[in-house]
Length: 386
Image (cartoon, rainbow, N blue to C red; front, side, top):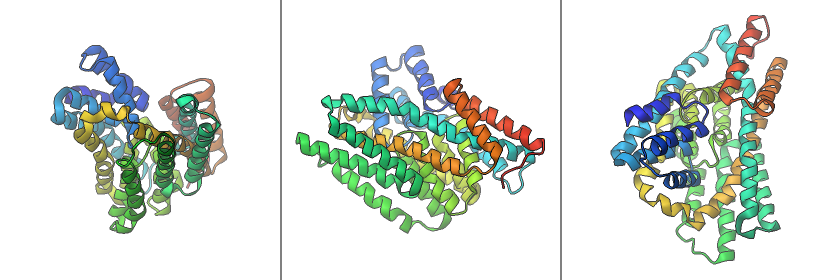
């Protein structure tokens, strides 16, 4: 378990698509630990849960093969290599006076992050719309609500980032209530969870203690209350990371880029935010809080995964929260672009858009190319972001 899941944790560059492909190759095609149908069901179920879906899938597959001990071992083996890498890179990029080439690489890669977020949102947009249009013979009302949720998520991400989680939960709760009223389905078990999450979201910042309490709150939002993929975590983290002066806007772009170019789950970006806030203890605390819910979902509820996929209440909730999350990704691109200040960075951003959309290059290659461009520019005498 340590060897196989650790190999995926070390070589899983490219985010969830790469992780899913590697897990499928190992668990279905090579070892036949799961059949294809069960694996696809697990993907669908993990996408219904908050938090990092590919991490939950990796933990679930390990649980399926070797039980709870295997889930812990496999999950840690999947997470830890990338966590070590991003903490080491954080120490380099967030140092008080990093070398000039490091600053150039960070400025170049950071300039391309908005393009990566834009591509992430775009790839999710069409499948979500088609699913909404095909559901239950959905009419104009259902499609109209999809647009409203999308706009609400985008607006929230661009304006009230720290409270985006309430918008995501609110959109999911609204769709759940509307579906329940129309179909007469019993949702008494699900509605309290939504209301409870809303209350916790409102009260948690008030009970946090100091910097570490704030770090724990940011990590909790990322790991337990986010829906829709890795880039939704950007607006959930940015206002706290920059607004609390843990890092500058430019440094935040750097850590988002680091989360993309390191292997393993993108959610470990929160460890870099924790490192900026409180050093190594802050980074480790952020990772612990962010990933604990993923383990809890599988260890406590893994045997119910097959039921969850067919649960109408869960599907209805995600039908509201999902479009809002996609909108939040687009809203995040606005905030990321606002953080750029130098003319050459906007040129790098344009080049990244061409690489991703026109030439269809991968995210890691695009970010590394942008970083190399930044190094060349600053070493040639170009300006460096402050």
